Amino acid sequence: MKILCTGDLHIGRRPSRIPNERDAARWSCAAIWQAIVERAIGERVDAVILTGDVVDQSNKYFEATGPLERGLRQLADAGIPTLGVAGNHDHDVLPRIADSIPDGMFRLLGRAGQWEPAELVGAGGAMAHVHGWSFPAEHVRTNPLDDYRLSRNSATPVIGVLHADVDVMGSAYAGVALADLQRRDVDVWLLGHVHKPMRYPINAGRAVLYPGSPQAMDPGETGVHGPWLVNVHPNRRVELEQIPLSRVVYETVAIDVGGVTDQEDLDRRAYESLREYLAAIARGNPAAEFVSMRVDLTGRTGLSGHLAEAAARIQDFVSPLGGVTVGIDRVWNRTRAAINLDELSRADDPPGLLARLLIGLQDNALPADDVKVTELDGLVDQALEAMNRVHEASEYGPVARDMRPTRVMARALLAEQATRVLEALLSQKEAA
View 1 (cartoon, rainbow, N blue to C red):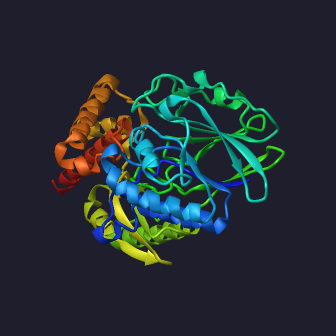
View 2 (tube, rainbow, N blue to C red; view 1 turned 120 degrees about the horizontal axis):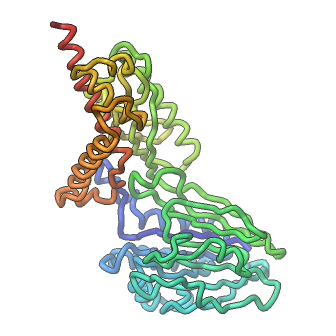
View 3 (tube, rainbow, N blue to C red; view 1 turned 30 degrees about the horizontal axis):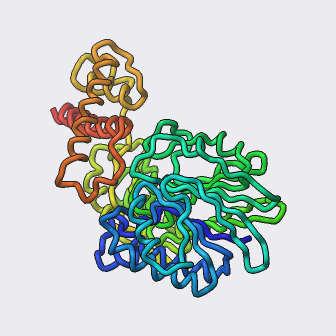
């Protein structure tokens, strides 16, 4: 039996960091749902299975109903049944949509948090049993597997469909243990909730898959995205294959500019590296149309403290390659000054103090007593607190889904600023 599986579509949302509003509709989650429908029909699958959070939230009811129903109707007209479960985002709206569309187009399993079986019969006569469970509320702190009482009544393969948080016990989003999933008499678990595609190693012949969001939606969702083909053989062997369909790709790339001596050399190396990265992304994501890149400049260079202008030029870089356009969302200067920090750190002067601070920020250790590790931790805490205040500011609400600042990011920002101050002090010292 050949099944196309996807989840976490979040119909009603659009990817962030899109530079041109006119492209937003084509790159929306509703548009990727239509692409999935067309692919399912083209692949002649026996069924489509949705693992929850099909709709973003209840306030997206009207925005989601039309696109979802059109796709379900196309699948039904092609003789392809669609089954699914509700997640935490659409626990209330997906049942309403399921009740509002004609019978036979979509079957919602496991209403009110009650496990429910269904039978699938493929075009060639192959059969499979589907066991599904839906979120009854926005938050579920109990383990849905505690109430799993369905059992195999034949040699027919069994597919489990569940929206849950794997190995996060006590989670507000139905925490389950991977080991518990794998010990159940289920041949493949198809899960929702995690947006990053994740295929766990097959254990005792049992497969566990997070198909992830088919369309990447923000810079935190890097890598390949798209629905999955699930082939379930009569002997219960399961094959999983991802279909890259995401039209928007987010990546963070590192460019080593160590040893560059002038701005022209830096620009050339950065642009050559960007084009190489873009070509590799295009090969792995054949459906990609726009790539949003975050760039980390790394390495030791005498230009380390003077990269603001170069970073601005890189951020303006927009280049098409094979139908794919790249936009630079952010440039981080993580380079290290081409100066001998160890030698400077021995001096009892402001450059020496800064050198010791930089060694601590970069290597997580401090060689002297005048800048204590506890003081360094306090400095990082202050920087992180300031970054979080900006991240949570109401003015930045539209991009609040971006990754929250971390201590690693705070240390990197402090190291960048400390390097600039150190280079300025050294320049002043040389001029004097």
